[in-house]
Length: 218
Figure 1 (cartoon, rainbow, N blue to C red):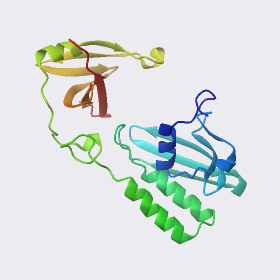
Figure 2: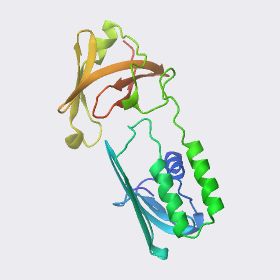
Figure 3: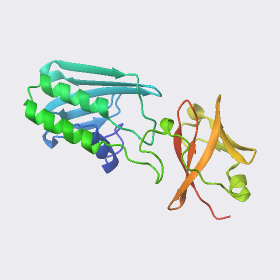
């Protein structure tokens, strides 16, 4: 369960597995977000508790196996922006825990190679580099008509936790859209369509973001 309200769904399990936990249904419980990230029978057959942390430029991964009196922590001053995540530090954590939990080295080595192979970066959008957004160098962007730009202009209010997230504003400068959020302001560039959505990149130096907007009639 997640926060005691929602059943674990496919999206949760996909993330749980790509971060290389090993779910064991005999563990009775797989839970998340009770002040930590995961708890359950989730690491090399052992009861497992995890608490991680991320900022715009930092990653921390902590894993504990209480029955083995084992705890590990890894920190990195690197990060990939939302929309193009990869999980190398998660994989290192699980490998090292396996060493201390006496998992055979050939199994660890094979598993690690498989994890990294499945975690290769691929282009988010056709025609752009297979790298994090902050490393893009002049990727192709498309122009919006004046009508489409006008439709984007305005103030946007968060749909959840409004008091915390506040609002952002989109305005036009010299025929280009600019998104302002708090003290940050940067161009909002239009890249492609996906179904009924337009996909933009907020080209903010602090943390570039991939943004989907729903197209409406008129």
